[in-house]
Length: 478
Image 1: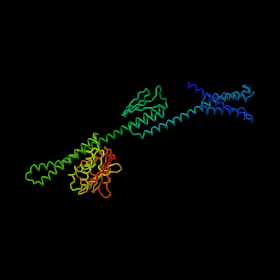
Image 2 (image 1 turned 90 degrees about the horizontal axis):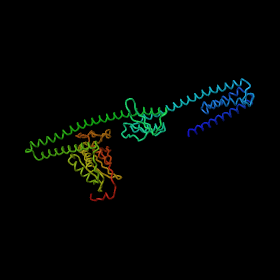
Image 3 (image 1 turned 135 degrees about the vertical axis):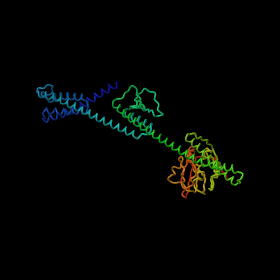
Image 4 (image 1 turned 135 degrees about the horizontal axis):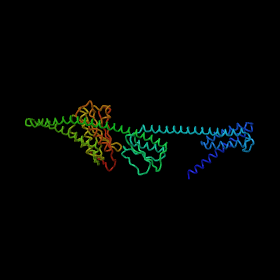
């Protein structure tokens, strides 16, 4: 029904256009005839009208119709006897036949030229769209972007809702519909499928060109993404192997030194206990305890690092008293102070904040132990806690050699052990700061490292807290 009315409307439009051109052509011919122009030359006016009819309608049929109408009009108005369709002069008959033939030839040529121009314009339009599509695929990264861009491009080109599914997309799921399925594949492999949300519908030639272009671009983009991921996986695997090698070298070196000390001291005590004085015995036992504590700390760090990498680091957050956390950390490092001076500074208020106490104490122990071992000899290490804008700021600072500026960004990387290049290069597998960062961030905090303006390094932790009056009481005797 709709197509029939559309045909009727097109017919009416064609009639109106031919009528308007016929009226103006006839008026012009009458004016020229009144000026004494010969009748044969008036055919040129109507020939011009035929050309205008072709341009106006774009139809060869209407051009033929116009040529016939204009011929009869010329015969009726301008040939003797006038106002009749009879021709006394054979020249007029020949002129009319030639006019129709010329009009037909010209109309055919013009229509063909128009079609060629339309084809050329269409090809230019298609080429522009294909270039635009191709350029868009160049900057895509990841299967999700490839999928979304392909769907948007095909939907814009075909006017249909489109779903693109890629085999490498883990979230891909086929919809329950009866749409048109077009596979995305080349000679070697199938990469996915394009689903047009329609039923009983096929692609026309132009749409096939668009779809084929998108398929080729999706194939190239998917292959590029696969190569990129394979390259990244290879790099990650190489990095893992490097880290494993570094870890094994570090562990073998750092275990050997304390174990040798423990074994040597224990063996010497066993063989010479009866002849040694109490002072030497205590000194050697202290060394054994120090080495044992260091080994225990290293094993704990290794276990926590393994849990962090495997995503199994359990957080048991609850409200802890700030002073208890600080005092526990200080107590655990008290035997490692050596020739350093340890100072603490905490708020006078009793402050509760949500944290996994065991893990956070280990963070403070790692930072304090790191300062003792790397800041230099006879330095002052300060553990300060202050409250700023509803957050707790923990800082472990020293007045030692400081951090090399070029390596501050690497200070929290795994196995990084040369932060204090001018300090004491003592043992350590370089996991302490990495674990500190992981634990702090897992509890919603941040950690950073920088140098003080007057010398020394600072490790600063910012932890969130709930600033409620019922969780804080004044303690003037603190």
